[in-house]
Length: 319
Image 1 (cartoon, rainbow, N blue to C red):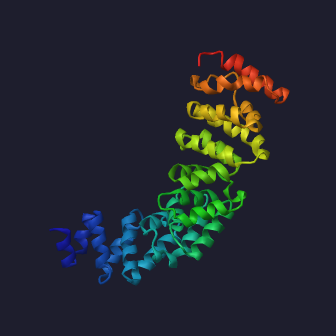
Image 2 (tube, rainbow, N blue to C red):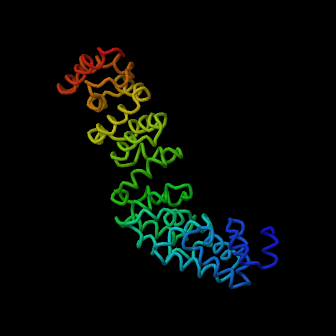
Image 3 (cartoon, rainbow, N blue to C red):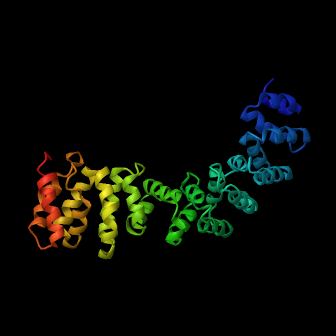
């Protein structure tokens, strides 16, 4: 017997035993008229997001049992993230479940099983109620990392991203938020520009250390950062630039050389970010060609000495 035939006959036991995604979906459709199908799905909700997706499809058909099953699933810590996984994304039908999703994320704030809840909340577009919840979860240190990672997920909406960037720096102070910002910068140019020009210096440092952001994008980020950021931030940028040089020396080399030649105010930043005793995979050719400008120039004695050390140790090695 095929799934279509079993559905037409209302053969709940056969569909339950078959257990494939299509069979579970058929149980969902039968649930609109057969309580046995709802009970079969209820049993599966302990382990199968497909059962919750069948309930979600019932919600889109305005079948009351679907909303009841989803709310029950979201209210239980063991099934809340599974229930959210079964829900649609970027869909206005999520709105009646915002409070349930919010409560579920709070309950599971200490658990790793909350990513689907956060990404579902982050998927809504042009929804003030969802925007309020996203901002509240970012403000709460216990849910901050999860919310940030939900925003950076493939379901995260542009509104949620904008909320993340608009929040005070303290609302991004969590490991998950650092990772999220770097992941988003790898995904789209606007986020890369925000990371480069407006983020906390520590975010740029994370971008340099983590393998998430490609060296090509890291190059773009530092071109933008050095062009846009005020000199008052240079001290805070020394360590972040050092991380970028260490991971992607060949891609950062041209930037450093250009700064030495054309941005005298930033020479100290560049020289202090370079480890004069490192080798950088022999990737700082252009920088070494111009470091004498700093060593023999008018910068502070400390900067000139560090440039001289780099010329002697780094640049004397084969470059």
